[in-house]
Length: 104
Image (cartoon, rainbow, N blue to C red; front, top):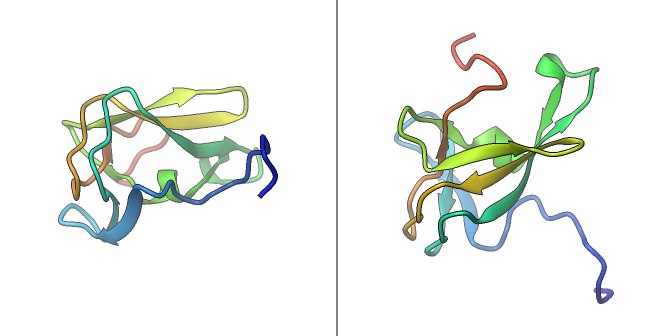
């Protein structure tokens, strides 16, 4: 890998996708993650897609909660997923959706 160059990774090393007790598959930590950690790009804006966003694995597998441990932050081209609480190892990451209605 070239030094100083950024490469897209679907998920950071410390996250995995597995069966969720909330809904289908979910996004889980494999180790402790500190509060205020930027986990990466969750949604990319594009007018040709439903709700105008393409979801990355971060955005596509994070489940809804009324008591979330993550929040999305707007960027120039979409959104990033950030932790709003300390996350324990093997804990499911959750988000309170606000870009689209999860009940549709």
